[in-house]
Image 1 (spheres, rainbow over the protein chains, first blue to last red):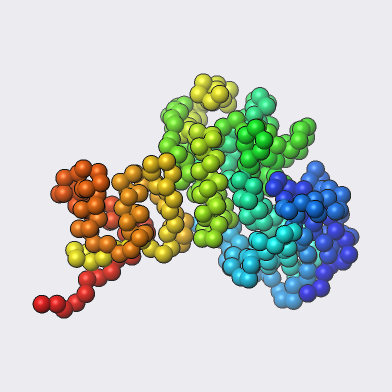
Image 2 (image 1 turned 90 degrees about the horizontal axis):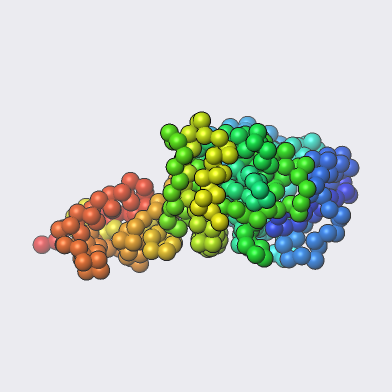
Length: 299
Length: 97
């Protein structure tokens, strides 16, 4: 397969660095602009075991299948197929390969047309899948959630669509909190406890976090299973119920039989270290009231 | 299903978490959380095909439950697992005396 050019760009993502090579100068410039704070000097992380070298190539066939064929239960889902040592991926306007075991990691991302590579639907979704697998090895996970930073700590509000994640994130933003993402967040295990990281796939509201100073991560303040109710109601859930709820919102890896043992391990350790609570929030409840209620129980 | 055998579907993965269990059905991506008793049954089903009677006897023995109650609980639980496509039911062999 032919590459698009000789340019490359290095992205430092939570849990992994990705060297995208084989880019045209136009693709390289667009990625550098779109992923601003995550761009590092080429070569950064190349000695790190989590490093992944991803080659961008021209696909030999037209990858213009309609987006609808990748829609499952209302969500866009790229197809995955296990092969060799890794995963073959096929999504809207791209196909790719990711070797899950090689060190450094190797990957390939192919599109039919030059601009498709930097289309967020393509690159962002490819990186989500790659990161979701890599972060497991560091005891972390991607979680469907709203991530809000309040008084220096990150709180993850998890739940299915309609649980109120974006609504609460909007309330938080209006109250002065920074929103990491109202769609997907990454937690990892670090020295001193768990952390919530900024990721480049931030959802609708997360762009505001681009202006935050800091190391790109925040100590995890708590994990909450969010739901709607007549008013504020908070209760501790059992570790198994917490693992079950988080597993349902652990994209790209929760349907992979090969990864599930590790996903179970990661989530079990996460919820044992961070007891999870279920929180019902009413439409009229303010963000301040929510955080005050959480502060009563989360130290 | 009386007399038939039941086993865990190969499309299910489960894990004990504290004293409960978490199951995921890979095709539907449905996640189930089961109690300590449920986890005991799932473990039995994961170790090989069992009859409802065998499951009920084990539950009655392990959890000091009356046999009738254990049988009723097992039927309800296995029905729930069946609705979630978490088990495979093998029909009893035809024929016999």
